[in-house]
Length: 298
Image (cartoon, rainbow, N blue to C red; front, side, top):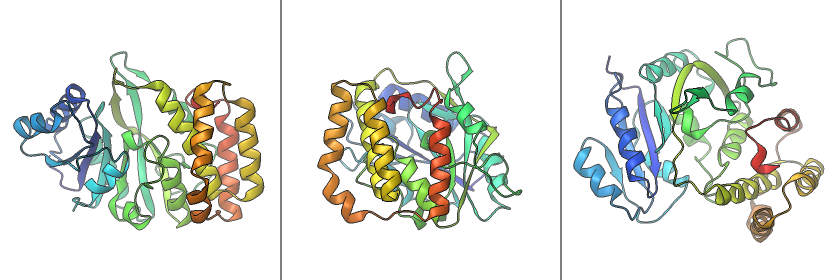
């Protein structure tokens, strides 16, 4: 059942136990995918252990924490038509990578398919699954599932050429909701994204995760995405909505301060989307107001 169509890309930072577990699961997959790991400057011996225990893995050590751009670095080493993104605390269900490639093969305008996510050890669906399943966006009949306006990098198989066509993840956002900007740029170029519930990925959230920092980055990047891609009136409206609805605490204040500090480069790179795409973004914005998975931005 070896399937060379998909390469798995993983980024990690100081999560050696989680990464080693994930690599063990990837090694056991019947598809036997090639794996590329970017170690974002870990100081816990991650790189040494990966090299010792998983010599078949392509290990990249840039020497610093590149955030999501670590995926860009890894994709430079991908030669397969598809790339499966995977976090160090997620792992693919056997057979899902093969099925994803089978879905992508006959649909050349489909850029990415996102899997159903189950939380371990409970086996319950991640709250974001309901948002994916109930996406309000219309799409062509040939899509394998609901049309999406974004994707989850920890649970998505993407066409390698599509990823490269938009330059990968934007270095300015670093990490935290970085998928939305990349997804919007794909949609702008005529690509489609879809949720495929037959695909499955497992997620055992790392205990090393800093939820406060995660909320700061998520809110900051939501603001930057808004200012980079949305027309002025929707951008101002969205900014005001966030000011009104996010928790009034130091975390939110820090996020807004960081976003304001980035305004010079954001305005230089600002490229608002056309009206039809803005309408899709607005539709998703309204739907997400009731999503249990979006509370970190209010």
